[in-house]
Amino acid sequence: MHPIRCEAVVLATMDYRESDRIVTLFTLCHGKVRGLARGARKSMRRFGGALEPFARLNVELVVREGLSSLRGVDIVTVFPRIRQDLAAIGHGGYAVELVDRLLPDGAPVPRLFRLLVSYLEHLDQGGATPSDRRFFEANLLNILGYRIALDTCAGCGVDLPADSARRAGAGGAVLCAGCGRYGAPLSAETVRLLHRCLGTGRFGAVAFSPEALGEAGPLLDGAIGTHLARPLNSLAFLRQLAP
Image (cartoon, rainbow, N blue to C red; front, top):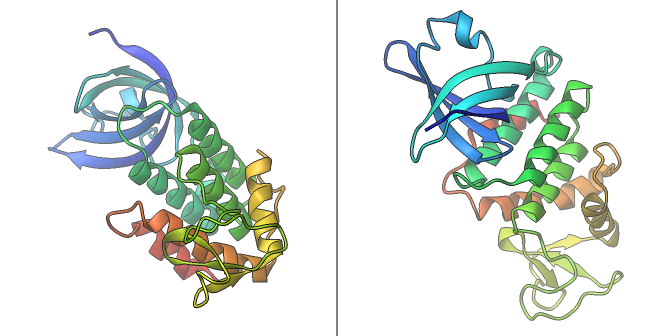
């Protein structure tokens, strides 16, 4: 098979044997790919410091079922300012781990690729905020087909007008007052901000109040958690950073 060139973001790496490294890449043209970088732990000439999480690269890759072969890389950016800020490292690590865990192998999702790159660029400019994290999560769920139904009760299916009472149920479900009598309340403001997250493509455009974050956060966490087989390692680090 002939090698192809494609843009990619490094999602994860793992040392393999004495000198190799297995790299999980989110490529623009082939989706998520695991590639073997031979000699990556010993040869700085071929890969340099490129094979680090959330680095953005142009890669030369022979795509195969199972384990592909990574032949070479050109660095677009390693997002250096992210790596100088603990909060940005935490949010960037969370973003790439979340994409790695939710994205199936070999499924190109250009919209998600652009979302991830935009988030990393925003973090590199100093945008490590809880609001931007929730913005990223809401759009990621939407792109992958897991969008939270904000205007329909997940219990009885009734439509929920903008000013109607809503409750948050398990697994990111939005419920009417009757079906969710024991659930946490969702204010009209929180619902409006979540809708706005899905209506704009620009990080920094939506700012949640502390009260809205307290409502939107558990809802999004629940929706994401239903699609994970085990907890995210990066989430524990993020929680340590929380004030």
